[in-house]
Image (cartoon, rainbow, N blue to C red; front, side, top):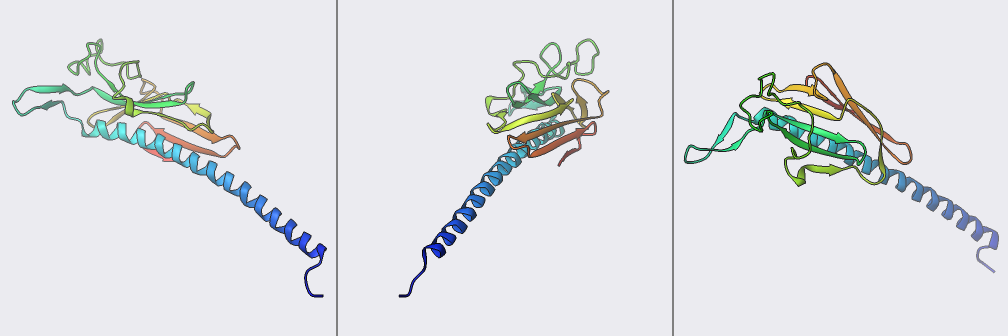
Length: 187
């Protein structure tokens, strides 16, 4: 009789099961890497958005009738809240809620995020469920002051750089860094 023996069939089944197991594990790792890359890109995108808003802002927006219709902020910033893994773009005004005293020492902004300074609910993002913050260095508040933009890290010119390391539950890590010149890098 022609055909396969029981041993040959078992060997083929074992090899197929092993290959399937490896494929499933590999696809899980790839899925986590994609989630990590996506969240890293969202962080970088939000920082770039705050920077571009500062670069493109003017002193006032004038409507068709020649009347100012919106107050342009003194600065735009990026805030990262480690406790709930949220990050947002915010606007900084002077202590009177205007942009008239942006450089006056007693009235200038504090250059850190305060509740109520959000641009809009759409500007608030959350890291993915399987992504955690492994380490954070000075990256709670990054503020870009127009027109250069001048960069304040955590409300001060003292800090020269900031970074955040995010990781998956399996330990795969990605880093986002920014320096006091506004250069954003990723690893």
